[in-house]
Image 1 (cartoon, rainbow, N blue to C red):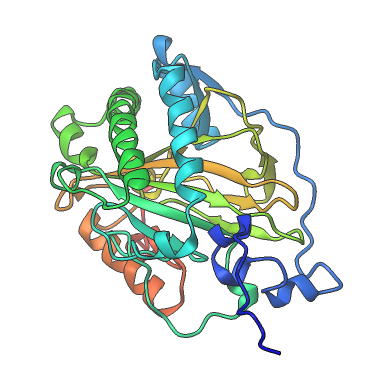
Image 2 (cartoon, one colour):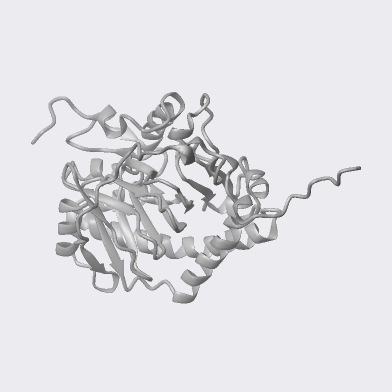
Length: 345
């Protein structure tokens, strides 16, 4: 009797990277949690009204926290809803359709690792053990004028990119205004504004944190290499920030509220008065989690002057980070590479 060829029935998990699909990863067979995650403390994150920014509020949040919520930011609710809807459509595409974009200049796809080149391509290293693979996938989108003129062949992804471009213009507006308030608080030279924060360097990363059978990290604890990062995330919990040395706080997701995170570059600009806050993401067993991060940097050749660090450019800093990513898979040194041995108090 002749057997009929088996027919693959499309599954929702066809959109997941193969290694992270149910019953396709050794982690699913573990009997114990290899990395227990303690419950975080309640959420006391400071809140700043964008329509009433003043130096006292900025100063307290940046010096004591390195993170704050932003309300009354002026981004239309309709755009935020459209952003989420387009992201869900994009991530629901079959994995092979997304994986084809791994080297796309306009919208590069990645999964399982935060180690990316400046253009958003995955940094190639040796084989990664399954336990070291992170439970997310994402798109990296550059926002400079040249990248905006490029097209993505898949109409779902190209429509998503167009929404991201519009959203990015709002993010540029917010970042520029907020940085000006920070610069005034720090008494930075006004001539440095445009070089210390350059929207032409900005990029966005859109993450989908996948359902995970065990309590695992979607993203390990790290600081951002940016000047500022602006984050929007949906109603699923899991994003945590660190206050002080080891007090982890779960940042509750609040609709239409942004989270602003200080990065390494502004810590150096502030002579360590501002803090580049450590943060991480916990995977969820039952729900996926979406987030969109806007990352903005200094001009590539702008020299950052500080009493705590040797003069360095964003290009210098980025080169150090890329070296770490290519050799060990994560940012190890960061600002410490430029720290002065005898910095002024």
